[in-house]
Image 1 (cartoon, rainbow over the protein chains, first blue to last red):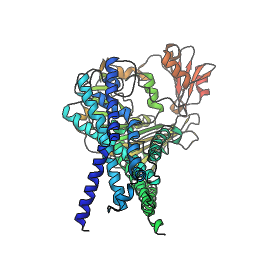
Image 2: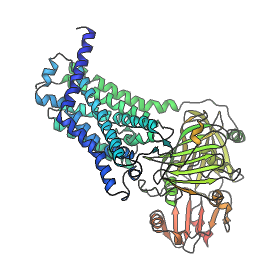
Image 3: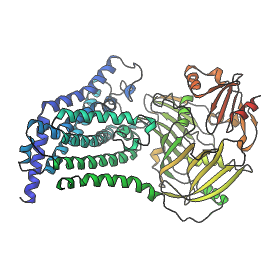
Image 4: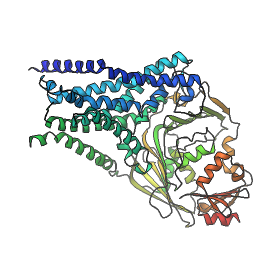
Length: 276
Length: 343
């Protein structure tokens, strides 16, 4: 098989993987649930504006609807996004194994490395789609229910629509990047079992455990090593000038997790007897 | 055996990560080979570096021996006392910018929030994103901005002003701060009465900009307070960094002239100073206990302990005694010295 042919096959495989992912009702249900977060926030603020303190940016919503998106993202990062990532990443290999379709994938012919890479790429696409859904619904709902003004950044400076589009894209990219490490962990856990629910639950539990450890001041030496440590660093894109420190640290950290758990997933998957 | 080979990449990545974690700090700690200098030369170096333009990141950490305060719900606006306590006791990261002349900016980077001090010529703006509060004041000529997190340059100057017969000054070299070679100016109090063991000011060998200030308590090696650049760039920052217009919807407060003065002890009447050098005790006729509102009183109860004279705040570096008859005494001395001064 020539190199070109291999590449074409891999691309076709990736395309069909993404198509399958987004043809699933479960994927759309999860994206719809994520889209519900900004909608609920916007309706709650609309019904009872100025009711006490809440998450960051909440107070600003009644004056500027665009803050719905930022509030929704802040609320989704610790729970809802890891939850959906856990489901998608935990399902990658174990899902095929439980359906009995994994061996057909491997006789296709596709090497085990290629199956892993394509499966991970599919999970990564979802990691982009999930925060993008929250951001776009947030902006749309906010614009529909509240007045829109130029957005005030954390530094007190104001940006116009063009600046907002750039920052919103950067926020989505940052959150997607933050979820790549967790996706790799999910992929690895998914190679360990043929029960997808087990891998999903384990991934979600790890996401919660990592955040709990991150909140204990006694373990501060461990904090920079936790994959959830920089999850809230996206606030740095709402400063002027933009502070890139947490983006760099986060990128390096997530890269480490992807490399480590990607390699571990390969180690497990390449040596595994595929029986189903 | 064939199966074991497939785990090689995993082991390789693990080793790589471990090696990176160990090797990076080791490279940073290599020797510099700077020429030896006298303390006076270092002071000149600092004086010559006061108009350096730079932008960088500062980390502040405090191990003052205070109880952990909740950092989440602090807020409280640009001038509240609880936010000042929080700034001193918790760890912070700030971005600082200076154009070497009239433009300075400090951004305290909180999680999803920010506090700013911006100086542009004689205009000074304070901004708190959580409360969406801004305050403006106009500086009298030749006055400095009341920064919420002082830059190392400002802190160093205040320590250097105190250098006299009370202090032994030595110079070390070989350290690196934010990837730059530095001279360490070590100030050791000659008095045994003070809580302060020594103060180290790390000065950039090339520009003379102080890059790190650390304070060690008496008899302890661990820094009680450090303020240090973690990275620095000596390019001139863009002018719009120093421009600030309060955002729409923000509460804006105009602070009358003399704000800078009234917040420093020397401008106040009835200040009683006893002792000298490092043992100085400052006494103010401030009825902190009586004037505290509910929120402040809760904070005071958390921070202070009851003593016969009133309540005392004891940290590894500073002691404050708030008497029940409406005085406040403070100094870098043990509590007994304050109690003696209060009598």
